[in-house]
Length: 354
Ligand code: CP3
Image (cartoon, rainbow, N blue to C red):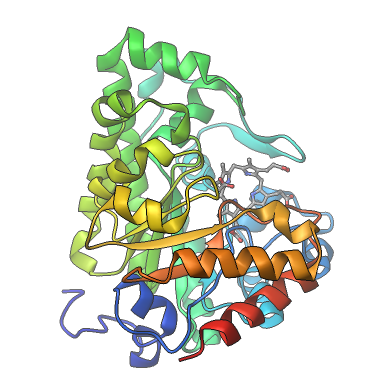
């Protein structure tokens, strides 16, 4: 089984890294730092290797995935790598006709709106994503003691793209299905839970040391609807990977009213955006879970002094937590100065060195 030793299938040095210790709520030598979207357009070396290669094509090339995943680790000295991919990759892998349009996001050719459409969502097998297994094998060799975070989109956020057919501000078609045809909605989210669980298993089996479930748009839901119509599917995903013993992180934006439920769904670490301070977030989440966050990503445009003031605020509100992973409250914005990110990593490390 995956749990034959405390370290499972990863090297002891990785198991003992500051990032994984913080996720397990153990004492750490310094507060670990990584950034959502740390790989990507903020880095000139990323723009260079992506020249002439479409986003989804780059996700299927182990050489590019390995290089792009390593870039922010080399440049910033972050405490964890995140596997370079996108939340729609497993849907593409089972044959859904979709693309990522630059400056727009995922666009689905034929939206999923009816029961007949569900049949297009077949199970995902490891063979569908053989490039993921290959890339993670290459990555874990290169990363040494730096842990690799695997990830997937949560059923609700995936459903929002599939049902709307693309990005949306209101999620009117997805919510119309949720409120108007709850059985079809439940069946859709259950299908997506199985696909997502299979995709995370591939990443863990290949060597990922932690996984993050991105339910980026769950903040659009009232707690009562989240609990009834979304939580069961996300809980199914977390349950499916529980036996591996790797930390499970659960993240969404605008989820202040949902923080307790994000934990309840089965996370070991709850991601918090900048709208709720971490001490208050800890009260909402309750004991037994670490927190990740939560610097406003736009602070990085305000100059070094402001970045340090706001980062210190985050660290102070995290002072009483059992486990804290420093991150932004959402992804790095493409026009961010990469040097500001490097300085921030250094600042958090020196401020928290024990
Ligand atoms: O470094 C990392 O964090 C890993 C890479 C990563 C990407 N997408 C690469 C990417 C991760 C973790 C994601 C997850 C993702 N994708 C989410 C959840 C995270 C979040 O931000 O809330 C969501 C909602 C998506 C869907 C998606 N894909 C959007 C909204 C976009 C942006 C469209 C645009 O061009 O502005 C994408 C495309 C995408 N995914 C890019 C990258 C680097 C940009 C495309 C490019 O570089 O050509």
